[in-house]
Image (cartoon, rainbow, N blue to C red; front, side):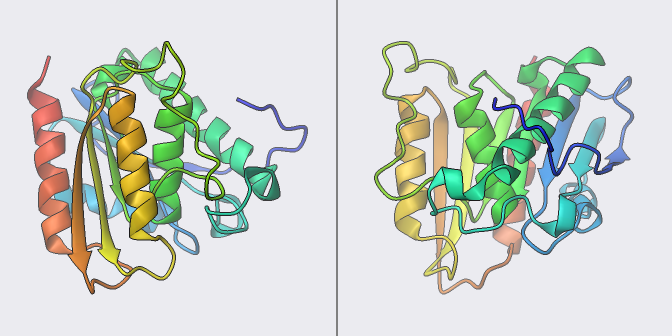
Length: 223
């Protein structure tokens, strides 16, 4: 990952809920959307209602992970984007240090947080326990996405479950980018489910929570 000389998100807090890491069987990293907060997204912990799961939610500086649309050229969202990815990486490494390996870690987020979670998995591929992206996709301008095309990348995600869901149309996330992201993650070896909700506003609905809860419950039980 790119190292920033003045990383915007380096010292922002990380809120927690659920089980402590030393007693958890699974960790879920929750990433809030633009204008949201760690406290807001951490509310999903009670909605998922899972046992023995640790939830970690970092706060973005200024309540935004990067300033422009996720469809803007990547360089236009720097240094915020690299700092955001570094923040997620630091959390993942801290979870690993507690004893939970990547296959016991789920990355999840809404909107801007969904884009960030998907981008982290694609740019730092490993067999995580899962990816849940509520209304989001991989980051970059149209035609610029190149993940999953290298000769060594086709099995990096090794069957990792991925849930991509979004309303269509959505004011911020074109369904085409959701589908493009799904294709790339499949090429990298993930097992991807896409759920399209015609006319759904920019929010998370109950059916999405049900699918996410099932993914987390399955991840808990897989050794």
